[in-house]
Length: 450
Ligand code: PFF
Image (tube, rainbow, N blue to C red):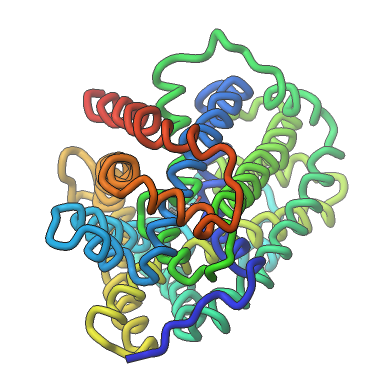
């Protein structure tokens, strides 16, 4: 049996958790949601969701993980021996596995786009819709890109908690923030960027519908990596003196700042080109942006080159830090449950996930006709994970912490056995018992009914 290591430093714990949260969800999904849901009004609701639902749920995951110091499945089993709550641990690890298998597909695309942009191939007047469709439907290229991405992830996980996850997060997260800084400056400097800024800053509350609010809650959950065992697993490596409420706030602030800055990178760029639509959906990053980079930087191609290469590097780093946490959530369980060495457990998870990932990848080409409920395999996985298992998991975590666990245990874990002051505990407890589970239940029912 391997010795269990903790994160060596508090900053390492914050950066690794922030790495899990900051991902494709921030740079790709958030701007897409903002574009589809009307801009600033969506952002306003999103911020409320982060503050009043996201942070309390994250604190709950942290306390469950740190209190038990074990993988997510054993954590629930330990706190509620012989009870059905353990299903939540199983669902968390299962959903992390499912998400990782399609997350690597999109991550592979970002790797391909990075290589293309560094090689100068995104610097031409091409039909980028064709470029994208030809690439994703090719039987080999996206699979190879996904395998390469999985190899990076595997390498980091196999090195362990301190020399793999913590060290890489300490390197990648500052680099990621630095790149965002450069890109925001580039984007603000573009002609016509003020139109993009007002889209992001001036709320039009007439655009707010129930659907927009529900999308904001869903996005907050996905973006903060909640209900998938990842943060619970990471918290099991937190040291006894880590301040859980502060860490949850820190991680959520980093995640939200990155999401909003990604909007500040993408929208001024998109608005600077006439006739390009902001609500392009998932194609925003892979189809709309390459054309925007080209048109906008026609006169200074070198800046266009730097902008696009840095942008896809940013996307890749964000994807990698999140994929690591998804992988670790599953690896920690396999390693501890089957008493395997870390290297073997990581290899088993990488191979299993990659196999499923290949099937997902082929659902854009060879296996495109294989459909269930009108969804291809990729869409089916995404739907099952983020629209069904995730919200149910969120509700269970709230009920578990708010109603099943002893209030004293919850308070004592959040205050490091009374050594820290947590003045807002009562508010936290009220939210976790009533507000958060009801709000998530509303989202879930709406999604299912629609
Ligand atoms: N939070 C990540 C993102 O925004 O892309 C995605 C993610 C990672 C979701 C880890 C869930 C998770 F457990």
